[in-house]
Image (tube, rainbow, N blue to C red; front, side, top):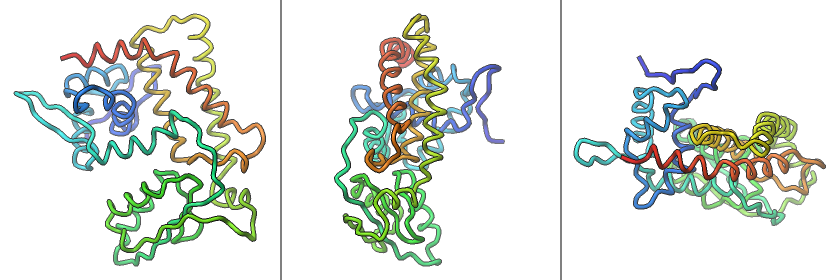
Length: 282
């Protein structure tokens, strides 16, 4: 039977340990000196406050290694895991959408058009999943668009899924009959994205206020809050690829959510780093 994350009463449960571990690697582990390797025992210690069992951690990193996100090496009787080149590229693609800075829209759309038949539908589905992970949206069954300059990432996704020879990539300006704003609203559910931002603000604004006023989080609690903060905010990279502010409704909650994220992230920095380095020691 597959190992599962153990929930602790009154605490949030980590539903997908592999995704949560990738958040940890992207935010903290990959920045370690050297090759960014982390001993599996240290990773188990870091995941313990989230109720993730050692068995669930081992199963998750094994799965991530098979999927090409982590690479293992052994030193004596110890196993170490680092982010692969593929994983590092994904982190580099997502990081600007998480940590900033905000890049102004250049008025152009990026298009990917594919011709992939039913004989290769598994490859086609993998490509769709990769494009969705990069924040692209479907304009038609075989055409995906993005307002962000992620052509290189889309090309890499096509290469990784074995579909590059069936793909064409363009950078273009939209000439109607809709407006750019109407095109955006056709491809992205703006109301749903706004609601997700408001839910994020409702969850984290009281936490930021408490830490700003009282500063009473322990190092361990600050580490836990930081990982959940980044993990929750990272989800917007899949919902909102940096939708242009000029095409969005007034008082867009994404702006407030980004400011909240950066302030709380900074407030948790020293304590969370201290706990991380304590646990990462061998």
